[in-house]
Length: 489
Image (cartoon, rainbow, N blue to C red; front, side, top):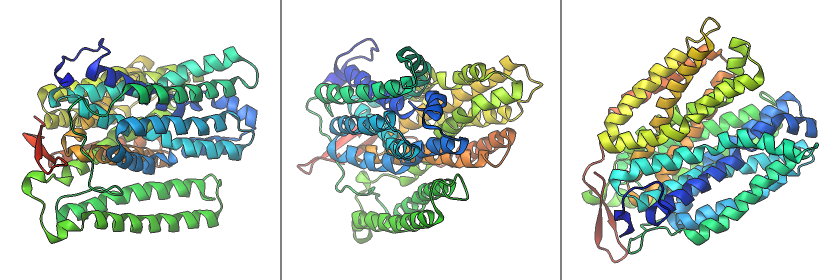
């Protein structure tokens, strides 16, 4: 089988081809998702936006990503990564064009809201990489996929302002944004033609039902419902931010309708979960086919603290450096970009360490480092030399992003046929974290903000003690009813 070939980053055949095609697809999704941020000044001038409207666009950009990651996870498990990634890239190009040629704030806002969906692309690659790589290389492969793909947002901030200037004129930003949409459209065809869901001869295990996550015990069913709540709270928080109490993009009536809608959606979600899992209330699932939902819950909390804090910190760090040290916006942006730059190495490093030294041990060490890193950052003030503050931010960033890599080194080892859904839920928790932290940041000073993140990392460390190291095999049932044992350690 192609899986047995050795791990060679410079190869473009077999499993390595799948890895390269997939991290490029993820890179493009982030490139498009963050194509507005570095051009915000030009966009604001062109559309005549005020400060509140700019803030609103930034919030809208991430609003849809929480439900999108859940939905995309389900679709990936059901229809396979090749189809779902290609479709996501193809469809997302159109709101990208809509944003590029928007003439009013309302059209731009709607386009940014719809583009939140492209932020879910990450989830798809987690499943396809887990199909192609054996357990002892999985953390490294997922880390490369996540780290190199994530770099799309940093690449947007380096290249798009230059491209917009080169294309010139008041509409330079429009052409730059439209070009990212064209790349997105083209890659959807390239990906579809060049990728297959599994190596030749392997089975692609699908969930029995689409529409909700399967669990394998009654206790886990209750646990699943509890873990759904924070996602709805985060969406309610976003609604509140857009309401008259926040930036006043939507009316109070619309906000109240949205809250009612979220409650109705939660009830429907619980009902769907019960429909999919009602058999476990009648007869127990055979032990060999069971998995523990607490494994998923722990990873959710850790991703809340790692990716959630990364998204929140990236958006406040340039301003924090500018205000603390009196730097110009350009210099502050460059200093702060060091935090995002670490992704290229840190995420793969987290996965690699996890492959070599064990999943749980790696996560414990990285989570402790994360807490220490943010507590250190809470001490930064104007008396520090700038270089030392930058070193502290980069050291903290290493633990944050290696932690993300280590989380996704465990995700594919829980239950193969649910990998997309587990990745979707864990990924969504990262966005829930970002919404939570940014809301806290709006209410407190930077030092307290870093302290709060450090405290949630300590909470993550405590929950991690309850996680079990993946060991032995996980069992999946083939279509003919026979069992396949998939090695996880």
